[in-house]
Length: 49
Image 1 (cartoon, rainbow, N blue to C red):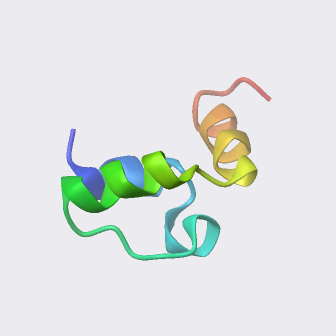
Image 2: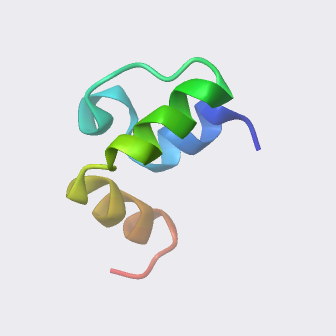
Image 3: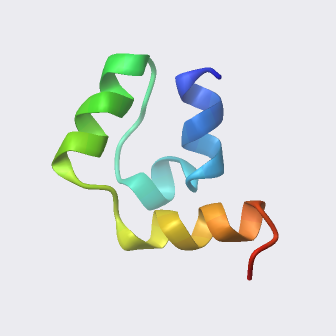
C-alpha cells in the first residue's frame, strides 16, 4: 500500500498535521506518534464506529 493511501485512511494532512509524500515521511510520523484522531478515522474507514 502506498504511503499516500495510508495517509488518506488516517485522515489526511488535516488530521496528521503534515503532508506525507513518501514512505519515509509516514515512518517518521509513526515514530513521532500519530494523532489520536487518526485512530478514529481508521475505525470509521473500517466501519468499526
